[in-house]
Image 1 (cartoon, helix red, strand yellow):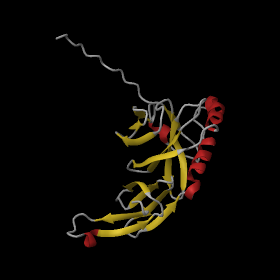
Image 2: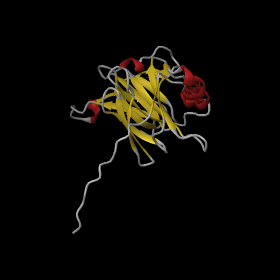
Image 3: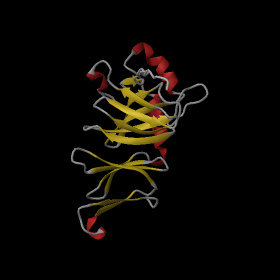
Length: 215
């Protein structure tokens, strides 16, 4: 809500007073809210001022507030220090990442094992827009995937279609499907806090033209 309060209700209860389970005082107008964890006890909150926090909803306790208003700066620093698994590409990729900064947050997604946060970079006249998926751990964030050559504008939503594929939609009127693991399931493993294990490009699908007859 605009007053920065996240209210959790049990819709099986007959009245609003009985249904109210907990109130989370996030402190800023909310933009995105969702449940996560195996039993659904966690709640993530994204605000209009681009801050991000996670909560335990039954106790209304905040688990972590990720860097406050400095979140985008911290995510940008993670991008600058991220590398790929290809050693020949490391230097070029690092120089490219240093020219990007995370400008906005899209949303989070719980993949069944971990909470993932998608952030977008608007780029510049010399750089195309790109995005990055960050893994959310207790009090820490790490770069998991870098998404390139897809959108030409801001991404506004994303959703997983399988364990290693998801789609994004953006202000550029594009819908991109991404394959995070095109070769080996081990390429998604994360061993350090600031390493991106893969860089992804959208899946290209050929459009089938249907023959038509004149009237």
